[in-house]
Image (cartoon, rainbow, N blue to C red; front, side, top):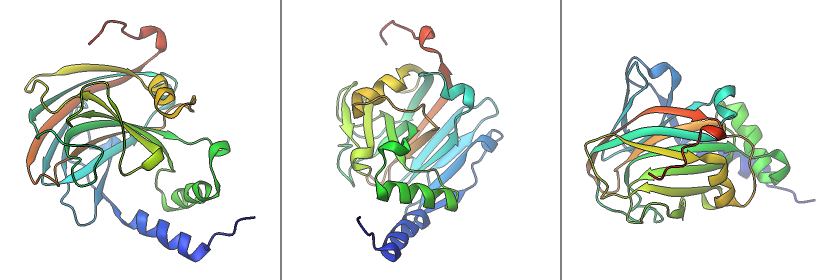
Length: 236
């Protein structure tokens, strides 16, 4: 049996949790979301309107907001939304830490099945629950930004084997108007990780411009989950 250095493991995971700070989300629709900021980095601003539209202003900053999916949303694999970028960022290499800025991303988080978790992952899961944090899992980041063409799947440099970036709009995409997206999150997960997951558990929205020290403005609205038979087969 492998014996983990418990004190070291607890200290490492406690440091990870301590590196995230919760803050208030601004706007009349803020109650559904929690904000996460990173120690030592200015916080991206999120304004949530009453109709659910989220405005994301990254000013040399980084941050995200997240919420749990409802039981109804979890049972539907197709996700649709509309987004726009008003002030874009230059094309960046999203696979390199320190060069991974993008105006906006919509993230879908999947809780890892306990049967697929090793000892360290199970420990992190238990500790996260005690700390009131989302438990470990895998993440798909649907991204507007970067220098790769739409449809490219990239490794997430911060999540190693637990995260991928799917480019939906490159940094040079049209700005200033709403553009629609539709994805099958279950099919994308299977394509990226090689197995069928449990239904997704959370979604998040982020904006990141701390590396380029620039300012970007973006927004996302009308995020909704639909059954497979409602999937739009027309190309974007």
